[in-house]
Image 1 (tube, one colour):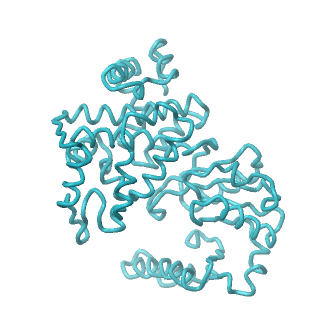
Image 2: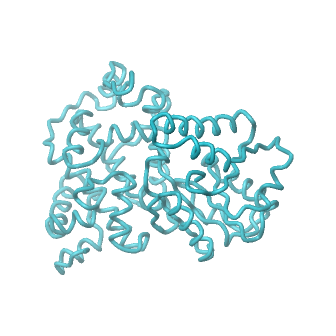
Image 3: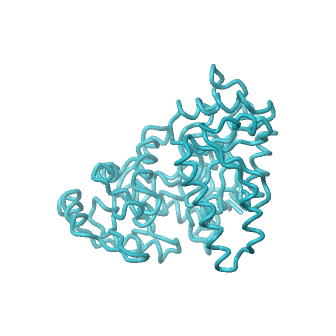
Length: 389
């Protein structure tokens, strides 16, 4: 944000937390300067635009009195987020937009009028993807009461930050994570059947994904994936979140295997690029699968995972969660790296043919269950021969 010319107030609860945030920025800028990707002048200018503040800084309310937009990124806790809104509304001008960075909590719940929230029209969701510096997508999520001005402000700031913004409906999981939910479930189903982890990763990389589903979960965080999967399982996706065993992830979290950030997830990590499946994970998989093994063909792995992903994307279009197929393609290509050369889920459907795709899903539904039932929009397009683009 500072690099793009905005004056930034960086606020955290205490000086130690604040120091970690400042160090993260300055270290990154120092690396860029050392590699000649940034001049020392630009580095100095960026640092001059950031004002570090903590709860212990007596003048922080005075600084916030001139803020036009506040982006909150605290833990995924509804009570805490509403408490932050209350604190911010006390010291900011009436026009100040409050953007919450959440991956799961409905924006309407965060913005619900009450003692903590007096300006619900100014509350909007801005869902960034991790790692934020390198992930290009930003979901803008207005709730039903969000003003057009607040939505436009969030979109303009996100665009200036260098993000590709898509406006999505305020539903559980929004768009990208909602599509990712059934993929997590199907991945757990394949693991349960005894499909080797490396084979799954190799299959989806061959399809065109930047990483396979196992590596993706490790990189996102097993704890994050587990929260998304369990949250969506209790939401409104019904049968589309069935067919697997998401206790796979919750058990790993209990063991402290949180993915790459903890050094151990599905893979055990050593050095910059070294990763392997350790003996503890192999023992755990044997227990989880009951000793089952599978020699499922690479194309079947690809078809089952993409079927769950693409069907959910089409369901999102059917339900008005995304505005059009273009937004849907942009969201999944930039959000999870959906095989870029295929153009996104809707371009992919046009390429393989909706009728062929629906027939494939019906075959999977007969073999594996109702979680593969194609959504009504796909059935309608298959019957009419209509294309998405």
